[in-house]
Image 1 (tube, rainbow, N blue to C red):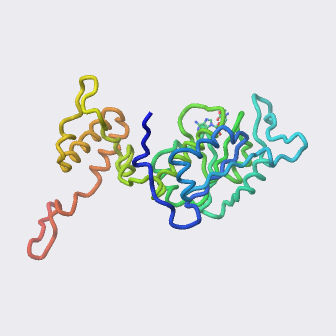
Image 2: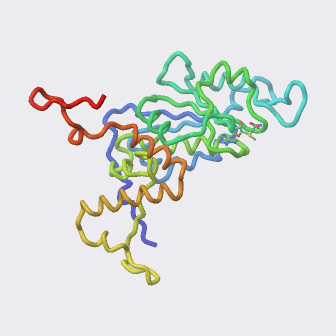
Image 3: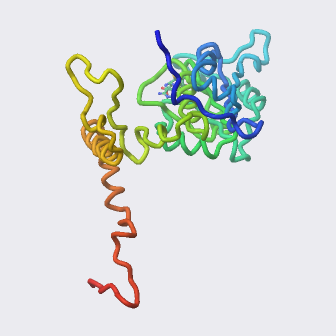
Length: 275
Ligand SMILES: C[S@@+](CC[C@H](N)C(=O)[O-])C[C@H]1O[C@@H](n2cnc3c(N)ncnc32)[C@H](O)[C@@H]1O
């Protein structure tokens, strides 16, 4: 099978210090470790844009049984990850709440929903992100109070552990580090950028099962193609995601008109006040 990595290239990082160090505190590193060895994530690490480090929480257990979780005080189902063991693991990862470039993020269904804007923010401002992957019933609240900067959810459903959500976040943030994805335009025109979804895309063959690629894309008129794509972005956002569309329309109403469309107040041609 032919495989192509066009558009996934990217350059080498400018400095020898990785742009972001990701640390995953987890009981099950084997669940996600391979995800960061292949494709764009693997290349991002090879090129020095990011590092992915997996810290086994069990290594910081104190007793000879290497206990990491205990039943909840007050009774109830399941097991709770111990605050003291997590705290040791967090310190080993360089956890420090007084340094704003180091973020400790607990994956939790109770957290704020993760969005592209957050991924962009972290890709620009974070130096180190420590993901705490819960498991079983969850995490002792005292660890959260003491060490966690924010709780983040990947959706309103409950998974068995925080490993997959942490991998999702790390992927979304890493691909936004400038240089990781070869073609920056493929990022600026992505879904959610500018509040809209991406336009429809086509590649060879020109006719597939009797359906032709839209004629406008074959004409070579890039201005017209750009206008068509923007119209498509708006239409599919309106249809597929009315919630996003509402937000987009609101920003258009609130945004000031471009300077060329505004009447400029000058001594020669003063703008009349409409009261
Ligand atoms: C079975 S869940 C615990 C759920 C917890 N008992 C509750 O009801 O809030 C185990 C772990 O999976 C992770 N997790 C589960 N669902 C998640 C989601 N939607 N987003 C982020 N992390 C999640 C968290 O780290 C959580 O501590």
